[in-house]
Amino acid sequence: MNGIEVMTIHYCYTDTEFGRLLLAGDFQGLSLINFVDGPEPALPESNWRKDAAFFVNAIVQLNEYFQGKRQRFSLRLNPRGTDFQREVLAAVARIPYGSTASYKDIARIVGKAKSVRAVAAANRANPIPIMIPCHRVIGSNGKITGFTGGIELKQRLLDLERCDGLLEKLGERDAVDNMLLQAELV
Image (cartoon, rainbow, N blue to C red; front, top):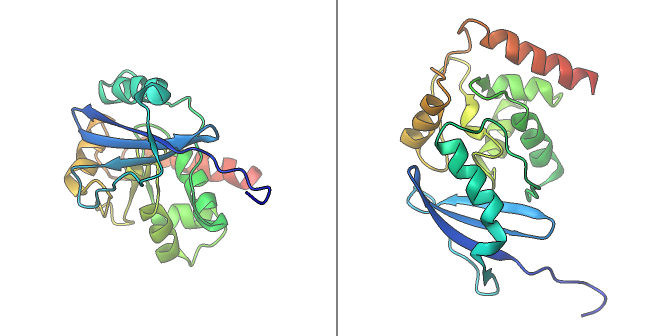
């Protein structure tokens, strides 16, 4: 194969109280979580290998999260995307459980304060929602905006984390400010 090693992509479906999910990834990490019942369902590609055993740890952690027993994931993730998209997703991944940040906050973290729309597009392209918590990103006005699983599911995830979606909530602004400070120090 001309010296290029092709990684086998594994996939499986799992049913959760938040809907059916399609998981996909390889030995470099989980690269896809898709809401099968959402507005943008994905299908496995023909060369992918169905293998639920490959995702046991991911499924256990997702179920713990959905039951309110897990706040952080401990899995190897391998999100696909451009360097900018991965930079945005790295910033999104640092939003604390139960907190929210605006697209504007994320734009400031990645050093592109005027690129709010590009940040929103990168967030929308997140291939691993929930584990990279793009549902915690909201509009500057506190409104809940787009989500690949749908707005209602985004609200349910925020409710699960006991988050009302307002940045001004006591203590939450401090959490975002601390995240911004940490990002600037890195």
